[in-house]
Amino acid sequence: MEKSLRVIIKGYVQGVGFRYWAYRHATSLRIKGYVRNRPDGSVEVLASGDQEAVDHFLSLLRRGPSSALVEELEIDEVPGMVKEDVFRIKYD
Image 1 (cartoon, rainbow, N blue to C red):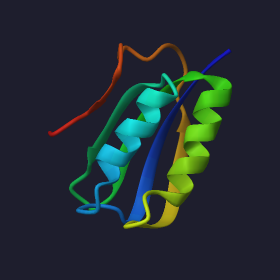
Image 2 (image 1 turned 90 degrees about the vertical axis):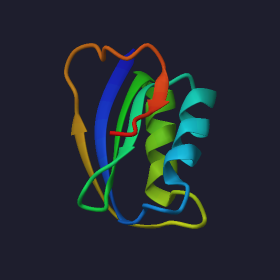
Image 3 (image 1 turned 60 degrees about the horizontal axis):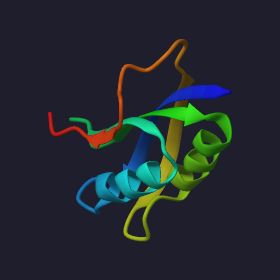
């Protein structure tokens, strides 16, 4: 069963390699979507894939890389299919 989530990660999460860390884990779990920095200092993740893989990825996002300090996650379920074919880092 497919599952899609939009996650906003708050805390000390920019400038610590969070996007590259998320990319490595997402691709190893065959998750589609993206990760990007937001202007407010948070990181946004769109993750879509097998429910078990997305749940595991979410548990990893709660911790983040060792250089980060995750303080809060805002999690929203995304209805329908995600249009991403792969997982990528957005630089916008």
